[in-house]
Image (tube, rainbow over all chains, first blue to last red; front, side, top):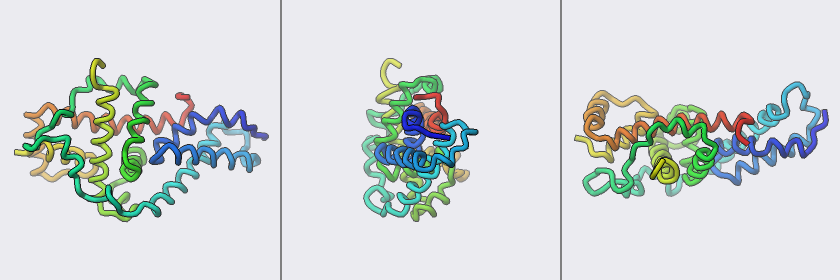
Length: 186
Length: 64
């Protein structure tokens, strides 16, 4: 079954979105999609035509992402934000330990946002603002639903470190969503 | 009495591991008095649902 590049191109946005939520940054996600297209064009015979093209491409993409995640785990070395130090988050609180000016406000009924395409671009944007390591841990925990002990083993960090990275990721995402979506008149 | 700073940290932790009895009690007391931390708690739950929904969206062709 022949595969042509214009067919592939129509699947790019969906594949990119799939990759974005599993990899820590846009450049990596774009690489993963590109690698998928190359693999698809090189081995068109592995596409039986029984499955939808999108399904087949997603299956290839999944493997590319797994490879990249494996590589990232090997490459990420303990530096700055692996530290258990949370002082960068102290600015969220005043000297008495109470929330400061960025205190959480009500998001009303946030589920409605899940139906809104614009919300997803904000969500994506906000996810990209986390550090790479935080984003990786966040994806492994929240999307892949791995336990923090498992994540810790894979990344060779303690579960406590992992917990700190998650706290940092969540705080960053929360603040960004509140400022850019749930804040103000919404 | 917990400070918000400690409560927020515990709320994040509670998403990943069960808290011990003392932590649960302290948190419950704090949450009964602090609407900001209650917002934080709800937002953590929502962000988890959103992250999962995002991953599902990405695997279908609904959003282009």
